[in-house]
Amino acid sequence: MIETFSLVLLSSGKSSRMGKDKANLSIKNKSFYQQILETYNAVSISQQISVINNKLHLSRRTVINNYQGKGRVFSIQLGLKEVNSDWYFIQNIDNPFITTTLLNQFINCKKNKDIIQPIFKKQKGHPILISEKVKQRILNKKDYNLTLRDILSEFEKQQIEVNDESVLININTPEDYKKYCIEKVN
Image: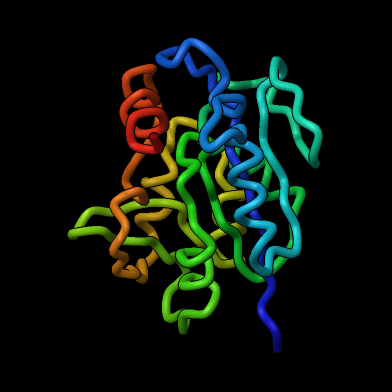
């Protein structure tokens, strides 16, 4: 049986520290949104959904989170309800550095656990890949005070060692953007 993979791209946050939507920030002459989707399109992803806020206008398949106060787990639930596959990538908009090499490592690995996560020098990175079993557990949660970490702690994780520190980077502030997207790229 051939495994199927979906993407849930999270872009519904307020971006208060950045001061503007991160989806529209650019890197290598593309928006973060375009860069991430193009990378996922280059591998075997059967479905994609972006969870966005009501101020962001994007051209691809999206679902709007009108209740940002419910937190990240609620956003993930909105996205997971829209896609069906064997495995689900959970990708944040604030990490546009994802590579096809990393995604293919996830896709091609022998999956022994329900959560697969990249590790760089013993630090946990992203994106994560979750099984259908984890998806169902997330969808069944109604306590929005829980974090994704709380839910994922119920499962064993399979860690993939990577030689790419970008799996640890989040672009949350103008300083982060300057450091990782302007100075590092140029």
